[in-house]
Image (cartoon, rainbow, N blue to C red):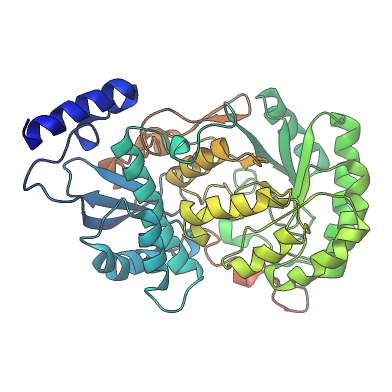
Amino acid sequence: MNRRQWLTRSTAATSAAVPWLASAGPALARPRPPGEGPLKITDIKTVLTAPANIRLVVVKVLTSEPGLYGLGCATFTQRARAVQTAVDQYLRPFLLGKDPLAIEDTWQSAFVSSYWRNGPVLGNALSGVDMALWDILGKRANLPVYQLLGGKCRKAVDTYRHATGQTFEEVEKAARALIAQGQRHVRVQVAVPGQSTYGAVAPNPKENPEAGANDRPQVWEPRAYVRTVPKLFEHLRKQLGDEVELLHDVHERVPPILGMQLAKDLEQFKLFFLEDPFSPEDIGYFEKLRPQTSTPIAMGELFNNPNEWVGLVSGRLIDFIRIHMSQVGGLTMARKVAALCEFFGVRTAWHGPGDVSPVGHAANVHLDLATPNFGIQEARLFTPAERDVFPGCPELKDGYYWANDKPGLGIDLDEAAAAKFPIRDDPPFDYRWGNVRRKDGTVVKP
């Protein structure tokens, strides 16, 4: 028996013993023909698109195997073009010709390739490549990514969505609408009159045509907000009862001592979690907060550096990790964070608003399915335009995200459709974060 006959017989025997391998196609079920050579990265490119009027950055990694490519989310919507430059001008030439299946080695080498690291621009650039490599691995193995991560721990992913309003009654109405759609977890935010309140919808421009997007008040005073929020929860608990799980996001906007007071004042209303009571610069206060209240705490949306979360997790000072997956470098880092959290009773609640691309949402869902210490997933309904640009978006039904079982992340990119939604460099509120101030002119953190 010559070598070719032996390889053919061995492949057939293995395929019979492992049924999915037989359907895996040429990528795995056959030996590579002589002269074909090892699999390599042949090109990397960024696609910037805004089908929901939010700037998204998606990375496409192509390989030497015809038709085999992967997609990753690199969305840093506030600095989209900086991420595009980092990918196109720096990571692309660094990674061309390398093995796309060597995911961990690629992550580690790209991570230190800029010397300085753990920043949001380079983290997102690295994430775009990293998620794409996991997508490629899944396609080549003919398996969804959640199987590569150890398989499902649950059938679907429980989610929460946002209810906002100018008044308590408007928030209640929005929450009831979500509950009617099957949501069991609802984040509630209400406006503080005359202030630029995070998470509250701006007045309807149709009702006030003179009020343009940039006319939204930019003044913020924390004490009025800290007085208002407990009253909102008192109203909602009376009207909605105790069955619905309620969440709230402080968004780091108050001084730490007021954040501590708010967490204590909300304890009686049994929140599912209170998010970001402190800024990343003030994480030392979590050690002071823990003995004072049993309100569950979520933190991490603005984290970039492991030194920001390792101590909070190992000290059991937070209850949910809220990392924006692409900020920290993608799926490779996020799965390590989830594993760390498991040993300290911290649950995952990955960041998932509109400035996470559908590709990023798909990556969140695959990790959620395979994570034993999953907590909750922030979710949104994708617009028709998003579904056209990104065929295979996770399905939101009865309050759960459902992943399809296609190989890889199960999502694709229609580049022709994406080109119909070019990003703008001056969308409404583009620079609002640095322009929210107190009455005396002091800049307020976002």
